[in-house]
Length: 297
Image (cartoon, rainbow, N blue to C red; front, top):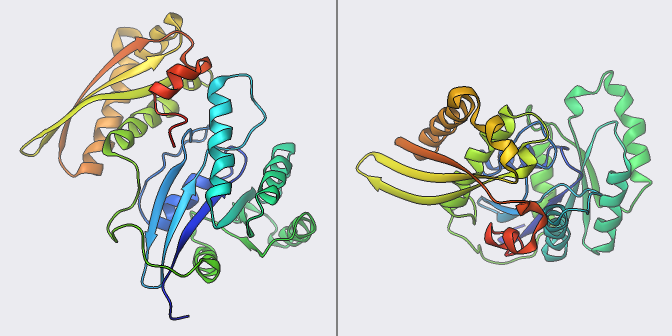
């Protein structure tokens, strides 16, 4: 295969199957935040993998889920579904030894997209005994006409090069669309906001992070120092005490963790100013979601 290839690959699956971890591992760089909580990814994020044979634009998507009551959930599902339509290949990510109703929903939508399907079966390093995996793979192969089914482990790097090669073989011929050094289509402000949000998701109890979003108001660099001002938006006044914590301890801890991560990201000192504000029921309002960048992708 001598011709250069270039195309879009949608990574889809139910929440928390390992799509973002897979993307970050394939790129060797963190472009999507990762937490143990479902629905961490809210936007579709382009991760660009440039190599000598091909440029693969991976589209990391929010986990497809059945919750449609809130405007935020509907926006996330729309982002995931539209990504399949825009892709040249769809990679459906399923967790080894698991099959839920939402997995079937993902598969149904992927098949309906009409795109070539590759199944990536994640977390195979956790399957014991390993021989138990084969019946699962056989059952999966009977569910749809997959071009290939590839067992993977992102932490261990299992079969990731096999997956990459399989994708390259099926991409259309064409020149690269992005500079070789570019890793994502997302702005620095978006990446900063996501890093900050990740720290709150990791530290706060389950019900709070889903009513929390982050908006970067200002960023400026002076010498080796980068100053960042950001707002942590909540849905209700009652959430402020939990997010700020006694004597500001929770806010300080999340801010410190975010600042340290941002210093690694930018390779310079960072001064981070965080404020907490309330925008009532923002996750239920389409207009507010558009203001936070949803449905503009």
